Amino acid sequence: RVRNALVVAMSTTSAAAAMPPATPRAAYVHLPFCRRRCFYCDFPISVVGSKPGAADAAAERYCALLHREIAASPSRQPGAPPLASLYFGGGTPSLTPPPLLAGLVDGLRDAYGLADGCEVTLEMDPGTFDVARLRAFLEAGVTRVSLGVQSFDDKLLTSAGRSHDAAEARAAVELLMQAQSSAGSPLRSVSVDLIGGLPGEDLASWRRSLNAAATTGAQHISVYDLQVEPRTAYGRWAEAGTLKALPDEALAAEMYREASAVLRAHGLQRYEVSSFGREG
Image 1 (cartoon, rainbow, N blue to C red):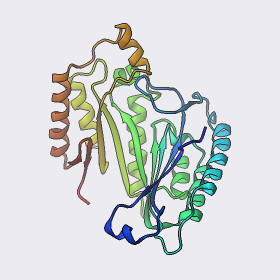
Image 2: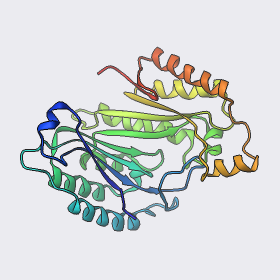
Image 3: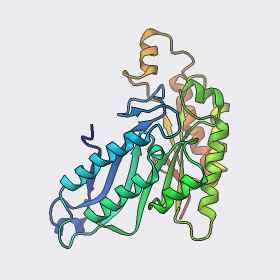
Image 4: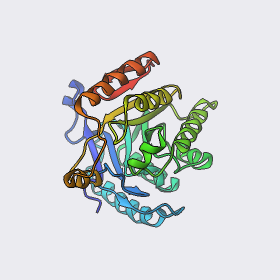
């Protein structure tokens, strides 16, 4: 199903008051494919397995429907500004073949226009791309990457049902930072996601992941507190009383304070509840 896979957001600035109605300034596109469902995940996803290319055929069908949805959405009004931001979330959007992603960028450009300097974000997972695939995504128009690391601890990654290990996480960040440092690179920003409060996590392991993320040079780090949702593996295990070693509320609060302290020490300032960024 593609219902709500394309979401356009309206500007609420005072300048927007003079715009024609239904003028989007940003678009979110949901690309639902994942190698597996993580134990905490209650997002709408489609599990395709880990075989190389497993998502390709499904992504081709899905993207064809997305193009139909773009065509059926209200078009850009005369004189309206183009999109300033485009976000591909998931799922694991980096499982989508780069030519299909390029087609979606082109389709949105045709429908709404893309402003000069438009930020185009792609969520990616470690282990889903190499140098060539990353280059193809950048050539498709991606300017920012949000990397779903969640932890740099192998035991915690396994306990969360993640498809990658810590070595793959480090290698993925290194690829991104190398790409960003290349002369003329379109990649302007790299963000790393972490989850605190995973089963078996203590303050020391959390601190190690925070330091590992902060020392990558990434411009942005998001830190999320684990939420155990009912229709997830964690939720079922919690209901059955078999989900063990979850940090209590006091430790979870201490982890949040620790995140603020560690990331500030590395030059990342909090600007939202879970978001830290470097100046510039």
